[in-house]
Length: 300
Image (cartoon, rainbow, N blue to C red):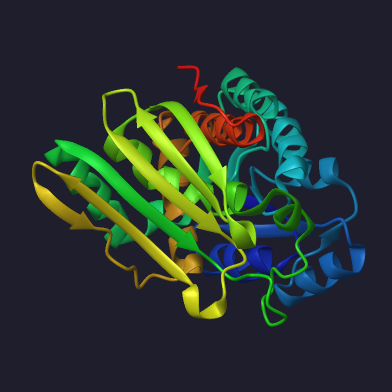
């Protein structure tokens, strides 16, 4: 399968490109980026051409792998799906529901396979936890903490404009929701509050009656970096295990699953663009709840 890579940043180079290069059924055919010099450097690293034009690379591949800012991803994804190319996208799918709907409409309308890369969903420990806890059921509540510290000078994401503008809600919030939703079900209502240091706290009411709390920041003090996910319910207490799989390894699993969709002709992957759109709808409702200081309903 011929893959075109869109993006030149750290995540594109060390996760997407590395995962594609290592995969036996993936043929990386080219790189596009908004910075031609960075695109040329990354392309040379993997021995492929750099493309100056988005549509020319789309024409040269069967599948697009996209690792750019979410608003740029939307435009590439719509153009690629409309051209009949399969989609291997990153989270969040978009920064608003209208743009997410555009991607879903293009993918469904062209009947292309799609996978959104929520990293943990492709790590075996996390996937096993989700399957086991979802099957057990009876969960009353969950508590999620994702405290990152990415604005330190040594961080490869310190200068990321979209992360600085949109913060933890849109960057690490999708990771929390990608685990919460398959276990506790659809989110029906959201309230939110801000805290110091870019903190945002969410209170989620799920459609089946469960509740959950999510606390997020990208600017935690280095000593306060934490990632916790705890479920409480009739089966007792369950904690999400740490994963030993690297992001590039997880990306290889995502490639496997996309190729399986293509081979089988199915279009029902559990993390497809429709699921990506569901995550965006919760994030958008949370953003509105922060701004308005009230509870916001999430449309079904």
